[in-house]
Image 1 (cartoon, rainbow, N blue to C red):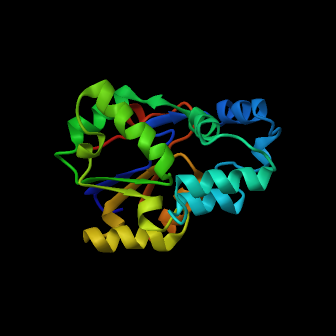
Image 2: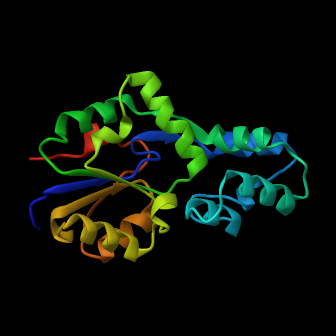
Image 3: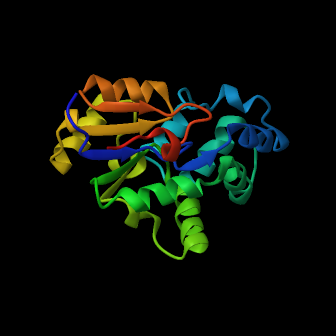
Length: 205
């Protein structure tokens, strides 16, 4: 195996804890039982993929959401429930990156959306007093790229844009399909499973 020269991190449940059960409970309270039938980590109604790909904005999302579920919720209700899965940053993992990002070109690649982005970016600045994105040479977000994991071409896009060799680049993610996709284009991978953390399980020489 080639030496690791570059690091690409996922965000959710790698650097930032998320809890789908909190979101499911919030939507249940708004009249959508079994929301897990509509949105999970790997399978969702097309509405949510459109949001993650940046094909629709917040206003369009809320209108289509009400139409899809035959409801008349306010945008504030929808967004509060949608954001309820966002638990918070992993402080020790953030500290690990801050300590090591001068040794390795460090990147972020997250499947996310503008609504969540507008929550977690100012959250970090409020907590830490500096910019989350300054941790990375380049942050990549699905809604800004118009591409999302586990599409192998999305990994190729980042590698080519940054001039990285796949064999020298380690991708860290909590979701197995994303890990398999990254490996399929020749990247090194670390599947960060429950109970693991980058500060304990990412061993760099």
